[in-house]
Image 1 (cartoon, rainbow, N blue to C red):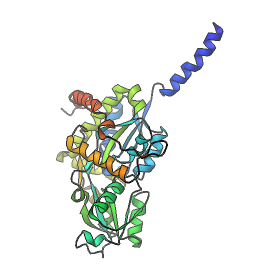
Image 2: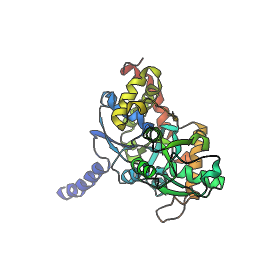
Image 3: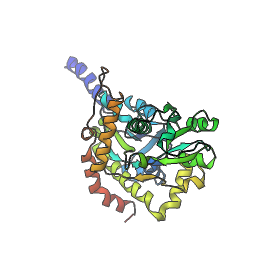
Image 4: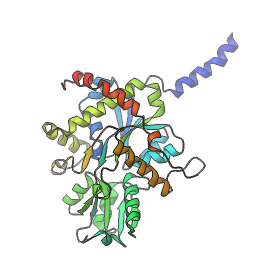
Length: 334
């Protein structure tokens, strides 16, 4: 009997480690942009502890690729991230699913003030800086330039701070960045807006809510409630009567001036439903683009073309919709 207990105990302990036990907090990563306003709102309103009974702890990353390295190392349960960066870790076999949309569109091509944009051909021979390979911005920009036959040099930086400095020093001609960076750059005189991403690819996918597969399996009720809160927060952020409240939250979280925060939502189109057919077609386009650009590869380095339908958990969203009314009531929103 004693020998049997010795054999069983390590197995039980391994099971506990794999499931993280009873979690006391929810680890969420994000980026410093208002595409992720729903997360900021949930925390500022205290909805996490009120509805989830757990505190959300956050980690900020300058862009998606570095964020996904940490996610693949299981440092976070949930990520507010662009829809493109997760594709590379999913192609290598990491268990994660997109459970909701955060936004579509919401980026802009900006240039140094003296640059004259007359037509797309004006971009030939120019240096354009954006986020690292695998990011939404890099994927869209690379695919768009290739499609249009434009020979421009794409250089990359970890985040908007480096991109802003590159524009100020005029070491590049243009930059492709997400909201609110274009407005910050216009305000400080380092750039002017040339075009918005919706002019390159209308309703293109941008940020999503990504969940670790283990987190969903072991905490499904919590995962469903989180998605419901995301839906509620996204709706709340877009209501005119809540604009001033949102502006203050953005000032705090993004360290931007009120004059910039006032421009919210800018070109950002907040959405939540991952069952939307137009969005799914856009996600498939990103999957195809990353395959063609050599980004998505399996663990052996072989190129992989992902299918959008296989990386989205729409059932979780459908379950969340059913409890949105009761949670709104709990929060005093109805």
